[in-house]
Image (cartoon, rainbow, N blue to C red; front, side, top):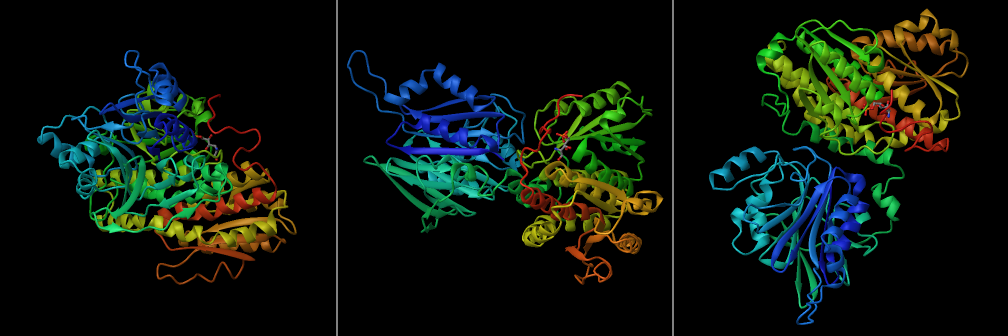
Length: 635
Ligand code: AGP
């Protein structure tokens, strides 16, 4: 997820662009840049690092000063016009690690077209090959660089026409801001899947990824829908805004008035980043599958430096991580073992490194880390490398330390996760782990292709089913209102539901400060059931059909001792509800049918919402819980 801005009008562009980027920095902050049109040429200033680094660079180039007031020519005394058109970008890297050259904006090899992009161009390799054959050179590892060159390839003097032709050849998601050297009085914007807003004010026209960048200048905005284009063109100092479909048909759009505060706008109108990120999961899951999992297509994993032979020779896998990432690893263990037949050992990173692990030959170490900076995980990785393991990271931050020390990396494209409590990182880690399982099974021939196709078909439906669950949030709010004043809660599960119970328990514990305990359902009777008393709250996970009868026995065990049980179950494949859990639990929440190995990806969403609403009811600091940090870079 990145932040893009653009401005054309009668004011100085660069201060507006930089201010807008600062308000979008939560969308991505590993590099930033602007392109302006100055004296008939595109001028780009961009660099790795936060926006403050870009600002210093602009000031150092005396761009900010000149642009603010316009320079006065010492001889003629004339004042050059303020530079008043430009685009800007703050990046969350997906393709190509954070660096000066991989930063946006990207300009065509001809120097004529400059673009800022939020999203992923799925067929960028194919476009890159096509343009190389047409004589275009490329200088970065990004997917985005193909866009200005493709527009340039079609450019015959009308920017919007060239843009419509270029986007017709692109697949994937994009929100684009585009300017052309030969049309200094124009900005074109277009979107598909990634958000883009057009703002209008007396002093000009704006584009931005969300309203937070525009609020200091205007509350009058147009929301671009998918496959829509906006053209902002300046004539006699006035900016006209027109709209079209992405294949060039003119359309009319309604203007909207934004009522949000700036703070609310950064959270997309949600009260907390955590709730926003819970709601971003359908798109994050979809993005993490993009270019990797497709119906009837072999699974592809970019960035995996393991040959088919290497994969066939793997004799053991370790999955090591911390916190939520460790809980994802527990699910991954079960799923990948079943798909590949490779024995897998999971471990908490801070334990792994001190137990002098035995690493046999042909071992693969998978480390999972949202931040890619968790020191316990990094040190465990180094321990495994020292003992000869091949290494693979699942991470959300491109170019983070852990990714740079691994042989291979599969990124979760979840975008920045700001809330301390991990949500979309967990679900996208699970997607990445299932993808690895399918890919390894494909190489080792360990699951029939029909089974693999069936799992992929169910994966492709996950974003839509996740959205369905988000629309049931009122039910979770109701459950929360009946239980938020408890001091203890127990999460029970078996198999994958046990790993899921661990993550559900951690979510509630870390943001509400309620003491939670996750327990294997079958283990309860060996001691912990002594804690169950009248009114105890038990969350029983029973999504795994083959274990449901056993879980029902566990539910009866605790209800017969007075527990108040909230049961989570799953509809049957035929969409029919299973009446058994409702028969024994006081409250039941049912998730839509999916393949059993994918159930945790859906079932965690109501548990996240349940934890969120309880924390809000308890007046906790949801996004920044006490004693915690987003990335634990100490041991
Ligand atoms: C999860 O909600 C916590 N924020 C924490 O357990 C986190 O998952 C853990 O610190 C690992 O972080 P990482 O994924 O960035 O390595």
